[in-house]
Length: 110
Image 1 (cartoon, rainbow, N blue to C red):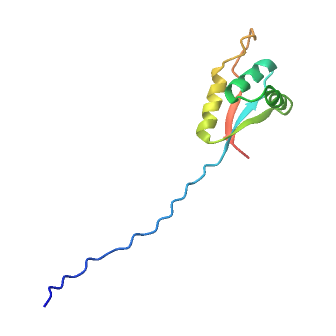
Image 2: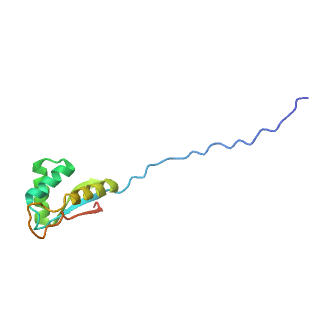
Image 3: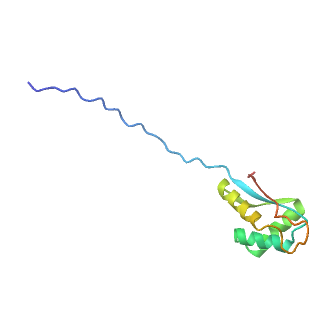
């Protein structure tokens, strides 16, 4: 007679579905100010985002006429980095008094 050994309990692997949750997008919002020069704004946008002069002028003018404009939309961490880079330029070096960095915020994209 063969020695019967009970079969071990085999639990089938559970199927787990891995989903990557997309984070909601955030916007880097440039605010209008009457202190920093238009040239300075265009220069900062070009250096931070690598946009063409034409696109930078368009964004700067929209901020100037509407009060603010989303200049970049993407992941929160990158938006925060871009906003910090903009602020790191400091005030327009050609402004002699009341200078301040460009006004920029990070907001959930609409």
